[in-house]
Image (cartoon, rainbow, N blue to C red; front, top):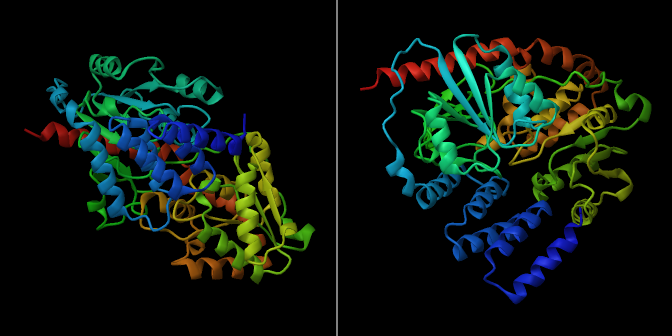
Length: 468
C-alpha cells in the first residue's frame, strides 16, 4: 500500500508483544532498509537469524544489507558469505552425486539459467544479448524462471531453447529436473537476492555452476565454481576475496541492450535553465549520509544548482525527511531539492533530459542506472570502492571510453563534479556524444559479448573435461 512508516510502527508494536517473533524482525529489517536505516535493519536481520538459525530468507537479507553499509570491506563480506554456506548448505553436500555428462570438450553445451528476474529487470536487460547472439548449434539454453510474465519475459522466452516455470516447484523437485535435463553448466542469476534458488545450487545438480550478473560478488557457496567478472570489477590480486574462481571477460562482464522506446537525447538542460541540475536515480538505500554530505558540498560549490533524486521509494515520507533533513543541516535550501517516486520506464528515461550531471552513490554504486544515464547523454561521476558492488560504474564508464569520469577518491569525486559543472562546452560535448560513443563501444556490441561469453563457457567446460 506504500505506507512505509505505518508498516514500521505496526511491526514494532507486534515485537513489543512478542520479542521472539523472527518473521517480525525480518520484516522490520526489510522496511528499515528501505527507509535507509541500515544499521538498525542489520540488527533485526541478525536477531531473526539468532531466533531461527535456519531462517534462510533473513540470512539472505542480512547479506544483501551488508553490501550497502558504510565501511563495508571485501574481506568482511567473504567471511559473512562463508558463514551462510556453512549454516545452510553443509547438509546438502551428500547430494553432490557424480555427474555423468559426457566429457566431450567440443560437443554442444546445455546451459541452464536460473533466476526470478527474467523480466523487465536489470537481469533481463543484461542477459538478452547472450540469448540472442549465442552460437546456434553450439550452446543450447534452458531457462528456469521464477517470475510472472511481462514483455521482456516473452522476448527472452522466444530466444531460449526451453523455458521452465519454476514457481511453486520445491528446491528438491527443481534439483531433480535440472539433473534430468542433463545441464552441463548451470548459471545463477540471483545470488542472495529475494526468491533465489541457491539451495538448489547447494545440491550441485550440474557439474559446473557459475554466478553471473545479478548479485554483487561472492556467494560464499562451496558448490559455486565460478564468478563471471571483468578486470574492473575484480582487478588482478583481488581473487582471494571470492570463494569462486574468477573468470574475467575481455570487456564488461555483461553487455547493455538499450530499450528501443528510449527517447532521443535532449539539449543540455543548462541551456534553458541557466543553472546546473544534478541527478541520481539510484535506490535511496544507497544514499547514505556520506553520499548526501558529498552532494551538499557540490551544491554549495555550484551556485544556484539543483538536485533531482528519483526512485520508487523516494516519495516515502521517511526517505524525504531523511534527505531534506541531511541536506538542510548542510545549508541546502529545500527549494533546490526535487524528490520523485516511481514512473513508467519511458517517463523515467525521459526525465534524464532534465539532468545535466548524474551523481553516483557509494559504496554501492549504480548498475543499470548508470547504463541508462549514459544512454540518455548524461555523464556519471563515480569513484569505485573495493567491493564488487562498488565498481559497476567504473566498468561501464571505462567500457564506453570515458574513464576520466572515474574519481580516485571522495575528494576527487567532488572536484571532478564541480569542474565539469563549470565547463559548459565540455558538458555540451558529452551530451551530444555519449550515446554514440556507447553505441559504438563493446558495451553495446551484443554479438561480440555473446561470442566472448560463449567462448568463456566453452573454456570453462574444456577445463572440466580435462580433469581426472
